[in-house]
Image 1: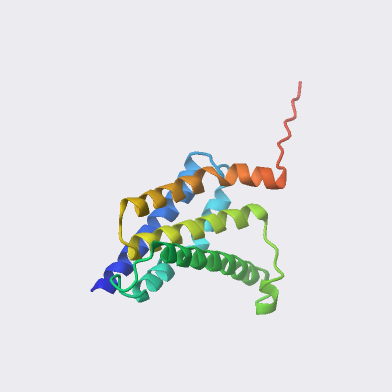
Image 2: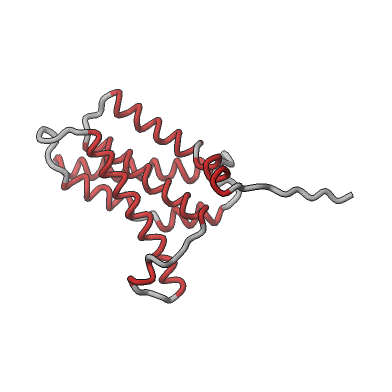
Length: 173
């Protein structure tokens, strides 16, 4: 019963955080603000992330044997990174018709899509693992809230700073 409960908590938490990040950022015109196709693609490619995170949380050792929030958070981040990296490239490889493992490392993605999918995979997986596996203390809940707020607010300025993103306004008189 405990494993099923951890699966459910992880799946619901990752789904809630994923929807909050994608749809909340779109509605507030934050980092995915004006690109509905990126929001739609992110939700489509990350549809099975809650199931993967739930399965990992359900096979996690019993809480009384290991209650390390750090290990749970790092495991969630690794799951999110690996899932986000592989799923977007497999999706693009299937779209292009080059379905082969040797192409997956060579496929280069748009930086904005990579950033959106990475943030929308790593943060929900980390938050779900923290909430499902670690003891829910004030520190763990504060960490989850901080991760979600940072994932909403930090990517746009970081992306603009890294890529020297500039806007050009043309005035016609």
